[in-house]
Length: 314
Ligand SMILES: C[S@@+](CC[C@H](N)C(=O)[O-])C[C@H]1O[C@@H](n2cnc3c(N)ncnc32)[C@H](O)[C@@H]1O
Image (cartoon, rainbow, N blue to C red; front, top):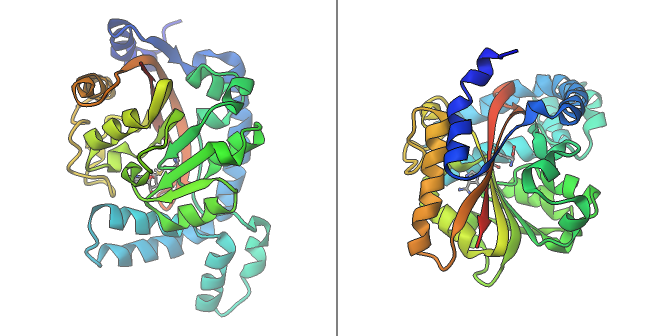
């Protein structure tokens, strides 16, 4: 039976075919779908319990907006509050309300307000997207840019990847402080902060390119830091430009100016192709994966589009 929503994805499928890339629609994998449903039930429960904190966080963010912070500085501060330990936030609320609320949050010891659930965190999703088995992943040097709350890192550690092989980059200081505790390599800043000599086998560009005011430099840097044969796995919220003005996203995205998700996917792929003249290696789109992700943040609970563009560096 034809599903109407799948018809909208037809241009994406056509784009993948044109670029010689594999196309995967995640919901067609029945094992993956049932694992996602199960994980979603758990995720929803944790979001529900955190809901009372949103008011405090939104108040903090409204105050930040008045401070005229620019670009990454503003985004970093917005995400800082999302990644602070909930018990520390509880302390703040407690002070404001004159006590009594802290016990509600004791079960969240060590956790933060932000949370997400995407395909990488669910059973065979990481293998479907990266093309690597669990054993293969253990041997890879991995870098996650825009790593946020560190949930992907925790998942990779749980699969047996060692902390020394994991590198995490984020502009938010609270993100970096949180992830230091995981015993992995952490870098506060954009991808440009990475030591020039570091090379990786997998680089995740994790759902932040809509915030990025220097997308071409980010893509070039990812290729520069990739070993030959490495994969760059970009997860994007596409089309990115419609988000501008609705939240904190950059009005100055230079690549993702498309009207539709498939246009942005084409523009990103072209941008990687064009970088071949500037960097010593080329990155070819190998796989295009379409799915959804669930996010809990100061916006509340949302189901968002998730497009994985997997590039192979040769
Ligand atoms: C929407 S969150 C994504 C977090 C997590 N990776 C996920 O998949 O849900 C975006 C993250 O990217 C970070 N970020 C935004 N712009 C960045 C940049 N140019 N370089 C590195 N991190 C950035 C933010 O601090 C935030 O932690």
